[in-house]
Image (spheres, rainbow, N blue to C red):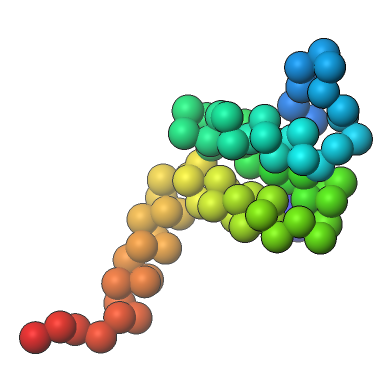
Length: 88
């Protein structure tokens, strides 16, 4: 997220979940990543904000952002293909 962009809304966690726990948002995101990558990315944004030292949350946020935009995903994959040496 760039400084000029508004942060995503905080997802509503289960009633007994700690809304000040990055781990709670991480778990919420992992349950939803395959069905709704955009919702998972929002939860992971908050997981990283609440626990900035969590490498798992930071990497998962990057992956969820990539998965939430099919055009960006294909552009990333094409760039990776172009940077790999050809196999003969």
